[in-house]
Image (cartoon, rainbow, N blue to C red; front, top):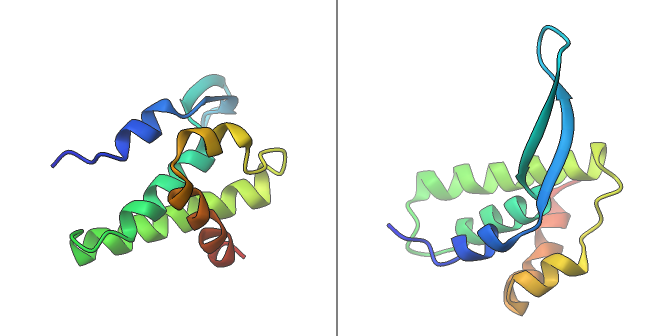
Amino acid sequence: MEIESLKWLASAPAYTATVFDTQGYPLHLETVDPRAFALHKWFIAQQPERQAIKKERDRQQAIAVSQLVRNYLPGLAYAKALQRIFPGRINEMQQDLDDYSF
């Protein structure tokens, strides 16, 4: 099933970081911006046609990543770059997601 909102996720800025594997070796990680990932998952979880089990998984993933950003990546505020990518109604969902990410 094609998800139209994947184009928003694909348009999100890249996020790069250095992480360490279990043996302590550094790795270069490049992925989608975690804020965009969380917002995308939150949006998907709100879709009425989404299967209930998948909705709950998407909701939990959105909350977990949002909490990770809030607690461990405080330099990543909800950026204007994301506001340009996601439609206004999706941007409004950010506040709802923040309410869950205590």
